[in-house]
Length: 158
Image 1 (cartoon, one colour):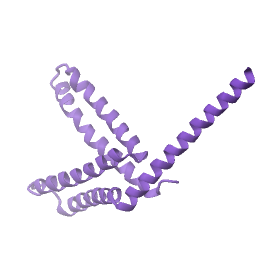
Image 2 (cartoon, one colour; image 1 turned 180 degrees about the vertical axis):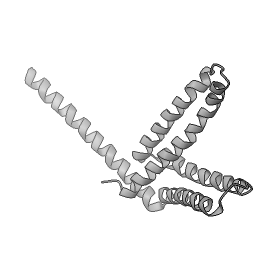
Image 3 (tube, one colour; image 1 turned 90 degrees about the vertical axis):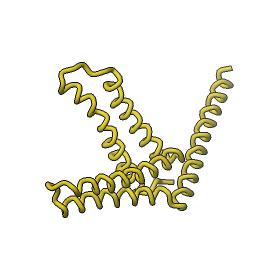
Image 4 (cartoon, one colour; image 1 turned 135 degrees about the horizontal axis):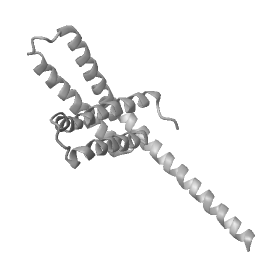
């Protein structure tokens, strides 16, 4: 059973979004560097932990694990809400050009809502359960083949 092609795009979008949000963790570190002060260890390690989390989340999502799928849905909805909020705040700025801003923000919000909708559909949830069961059966089959090969080799060696 193969994953749908659109799922690859949704997983990539989730990876990009999480990586974008994780990049904001470098702001305090840059503030220390700009002031010429040594960066505390926590602020040096936190971006690495965030990147590790992004990779872990993306790998789990690609494997269609339930927690990772629902985390991605919640992340997409949260990101869409944050974009709308930031857009409303940005509307008050005199230097903002309305048409490009509306196009960019609406595109990002639509992509997030479509990703959340796609991952939360009943048919996709059923597919992911079947996919995970098939994958577990394949792993079990491979393990049994290895065990049987080992038994045959042990009996030949006796």
